[in-house]
Image (cartoon, rainbow, N blue to C red; front, side):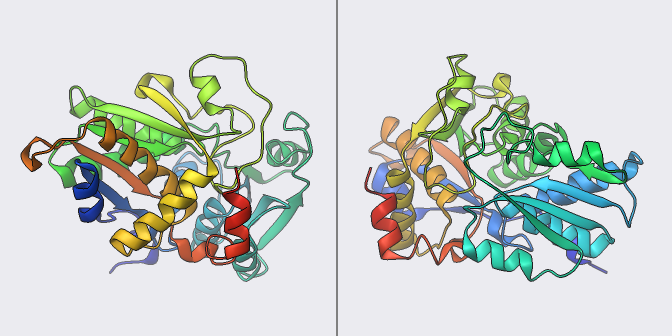
Length: 327
């Protein structure tokens, strides 16, 4: 008999037919919003907790703490409900109202801790460090640490990357995805690179994030705000494993949001802002390798991390869109 957690993963891979014809390359999207909480982060929530259980790090009744912009939080809330854990979620005070309301609705075993987003990232009470600081001070509290725990990219190496290989029959020329923690990009990149000689792996990083500079070993810029929720960071992470990545390209908020609407208008698929960034990256690769004949097209794969239904108060609010795209 199938349980709810058994439905995590094995998501469909679809060809974006109209965009493929428009840009002269085969563009495929792995629809991660088919997971139970409509997000790719269900994968790491299940995999990392179950691995911690096997290693004796946690047991039902313990408390898990994690900092999350929302999708990892809902994935963890689902697993915590199913397995009997308490959950503390550290969020920025700028969290999407839609996501905040959902998290608050989970009930007593899920609690939010809001952190001032203006606190310097290096401070122990900042969004980036609060969870670790709290776990160090409290017994029976386990910090998942999605940004630096290498079980995150291992999740995608063991699951998402293998699924993409099987679904494409190994016919992948380029994989491209935005960097949030780095886990999805590095894990899938590792899986595909081991199996497909010559495959290229590209990251997409929002303007204002530090990942691109960290990848090229440049001086880290002062972090700037952007409007592509769920990706980018103020500090580098251990999960961005450079050996599995060829290049990281920069994206502006306007480009990601415009692509959300392009996908909606061309394909009828309602995607979130990180999905917009991913498809934008795929389109850039398609433009670069455009082929006039269909038989000469290259195969580009990306992921759609979540659904646009999670962002009705932002992505589909005209005033917010005007502000976010006025770069």
